Image (cartoon, rainbow, N blue to C red):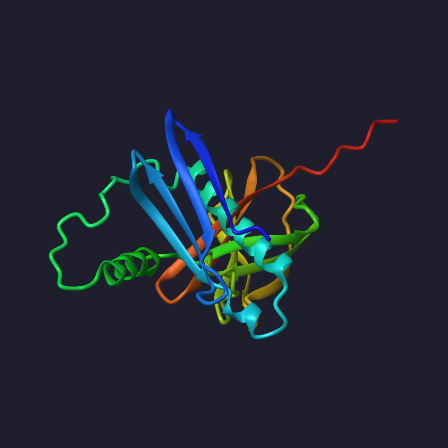
Length: 219
């Protein structure tokens, strides 16, 4: 069974070390730490206790470990930690708590600022004059669990007109929503879709360029 991964990631001349490990069935936690220069830069801890409620499937646990590890690597490559100042773990801490309690408090503080994630899991492509059909998923990155009741809005922006909302919706209990709307045919200029999701004070968005329709050959 896969119990962890260790990967060195290069980004903009810096080397980040990503370490993910399974804490074991007695403590069903997947922990990923990002180090740079020997100091902890970021951390993520998620539980897989839900998998233990049914018959344990080692393959599913392994897939979840790998998915979390790869997600943190992707965050690095997308520049999420490039401008983040390294603060050595434990810096300035004066406490009577045990080391384990301090670690848990620190890890909790890291996940407390986590934002929702918006993902497009299906679409028919976006062409002017056609119909946009979007299958969207709003989730918590640390657990991949869907966010129910998130508001999702699809806006049109272009180089020739003011932005306008095309369609709105709300995610179901699984964090999913399917939306569709007609796309205008522009005589000139370029257009794109801005898909925005919000839950409370948290928000996320993705952008998609709208293509021009293929021109028919003369004759």
